[in-house]
Image (cartoon, rainbow, N blue to C red; front, side, top):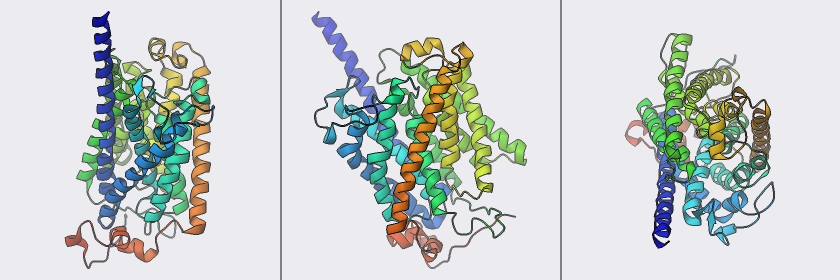
Length: 430
């Protein structure tokens, strides 16, 4: 008996260690966002983009500790948690000690917040970042987390979202889309006739490296959501994740190559991320062949949706809506098509998908989840930003935007030897 108890304790300790390692991997994704966003924006804003990522993550840590975790995972009702503020009165969640589970889930909240801020890039005031960070982490993200993961109504109805295509990515993307519409396009992005101009990011190598870091961190995201390793299931999750990503990479690049005659590196990178976003909901529920299909479709969808938004006058510099939004929707719905009975039984959530004879039930549950979460985040984000617009204003002045947010918000350029004394110019496409 003593030996069995010791073996069980060792197994639990190994599982908890894996969750903490996964949390560190997800936190390190912030470095990926720094490089991705800084590389995708102009040199005059690089220091600002990098710095605000760290600053807003710090806000997220404190707010999620104070109230966000309680609203998401505290005991309450089907809409919101109502206890566990400041982490008081909770010892463990899903068998994981509270300190470890908190760090893991806080990292997820930080990723969703970073996605949301893609829609603010190069034109929002730093004060807006500060206030929105507090309200998003306290009142927007935790509600969606509770609905699906914390004992809320969508989880009770069997919504399948293993690691957060809806909870993390769609939530952040909808907030980003609302923000970019309300902030309006960057100066110089569109001509008087509505034709978009090309405003290239200043360092594509940064962007590539950022995507690679995000890819590595995603194994903490998806495989870490098994909350353990002793049963070996995390291997299947990692396998479907990497297969989907490979497919998204290749098919996004091919889509751009066929459509424009050029193999667009940005399109390929967005395909990597879109595939990762899509497989995040289904990595534990689908077989390998379905993972490839999900990733390939996500890569193509993200490419053409980004073109659609650009032509509609929606200036989304980091492609948050097309990478995290449309791919988040597709990845969530894909469970309703491809969820395997074998894997559904292992995970214990929902039912098998349409292509396995499950009918339209699971697809309907997934669709309701997408609509409900999308509407809530859109309305909540709009209300928050509308109040900020009416009080402190959302956007820096034209002079400050032309000067660059590095100097106007922080008093120093990220690249002082290149930009000091120079007036930034817009490069326009033909």
